[in-house]
Structure formats: C-alpha cells, structure tokens
Image 1 (cartoon, rainbow, N blue to C red):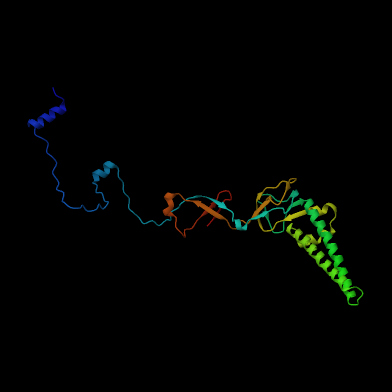
Image 2 (image 1 turned 180 degrees about the vertical axis):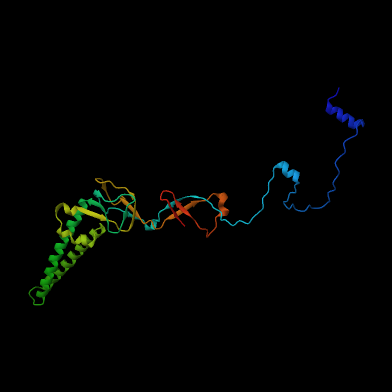
Amino acid sequence: EYPEQVQEVLRLVTGSKAARPLPPTVHVPEGPRPPWDGLITMTTKAETSMGVQTVEVKAQTDPIRLELLGRTEYITDTMTKVRPMFKGRVDKVHVTVGQTVKKGDVLIDLYSTDLAEAKSAYDIERIQWIYDKKLLEAREALVGTKAISQQLFEETRNNEMKSRREYEVARDKLHVFGLSDEDVERVTEESGAQKARMTIRSPSDGFVIERDVVPGNLYDENDTLLVIAPLDRLWVWGNVFESDLDLVVLGQSWEIRFPFLEKTLQ
C-alpha cells in the first residue's frame, strides 16, 4: 500500500483517473511593461473575506494640531545682575524670588569697611580742595597788587588743580561703588559706622528670578546676589521630532500654554 499522495501521482501518470485540468496560459507581450498605477481591483467577496472597509475621501479643512514639548528662556540682553562693587557683609535682603520690583526699590543693605574708607578719603579730599580753592581766590586778588609774588600765586593755583583732581577721583570712586549723587552729598553728614552702610537699589523694573544671597555672609564684586529680568518678553523653544519636520513651516501660529501659570498665549 502506497500513501494516498503517492497513489494520486500514480493515477495521474498511468491515466487511470482523469487528470486535473491545467490553468490557462497567459501571453505576456514583449517589451517594457507600463508603470503600475498603484490601483488594486478587488471583488466584493474579497473585500468581505479580508474585512476591508472604505470611506469617502474629503478635503481637509481643519488645521493640523502638532503638540510639542518646549521650554522658556529669559532674554539675556534685558537681564540685570545685581553685584556689590566692593567686599562687604549683607545685613538684610528686602526681596524674594518671584517678587516684582521697580527701578529704585530697596534690595539689599550692605556693611563694608572698604566703603567706609572710600567715603572717608572722599571727605578728606573734598575738605582739602575747598581750602585750596578759597586760598587761590584770596591770593588771586593779591597778585594784582603785588602783595604776593607771581611764583607764589602759580604754586597756589597748581595746588588747587591737584587737590580738585584728587577730589574728583575720590567722588568718582563712590559712583563706581554704586552711590548716587544724593548719596555722595550725604557723605559729609555721616559719621562712624554710618559711613560703612549702603543700600543697593534696583537698577531696573522686572521680577526677581534668582537670589543667591544670605544675610550675614560676606560677598565681593565677583558674586551675583540677585538677577532681575522683565517677563514681558521671553524666548520659547519647541522641540520638533524629525518625523514631524514636514509639518512645520515659516509663518505658522503657535499656541503656547504655561501649565503652572494656567495661561495661554498666541
């Protein structure tokens, strides 16, 4: 006994049973074939058996929404870093992170021996210049009457010019330290520990976005105590995946959502 498959082959070869008809031959014309148009024709039975469903194609009218993760960044050109211009101790900080400040608002109280020395030097140079100035005015009236020699008058004028320049340098140093004209004018009224105290005021409007200062610590001109930035303008960076690059073009509108602020901007 042969297996059933072998018996079927034997019957086909011996002709004991009518052979199954062969499929019809198809004539393929010679030459290059036309390009495929991308269409596939299916019968209703084939669609049903494969579960194919079709819908009518419509023109897209709604915009494509592409949601991106992003981050904000401050504009560095508008940021203000508050630094002391001398070595000193911070006595009090009047602001916190997130607080709104206006130009001229009090930020930090400082105590510095360097500042006291600069104020004292300014006071000494100012007194010397005032004395030399009055002496020059007095001798200028005498030189015409020959009461004093021309040489003595020239020496007096030279001393006045020298003391005036030293006074201006001492005054400019206080301006570099951050004192205003009003603060410099009040130096002559200060005494003792008052000369070592200074109040740093806000140089611009904005929000305190960074604070790296603690009362009681020493700081110098290399330390950034506060950073102030206006928040009316920000950089917004959106991260686009490579697969979505064709969906991003120049001129598109953005809807920016700040989850922590519960705010949306166009």
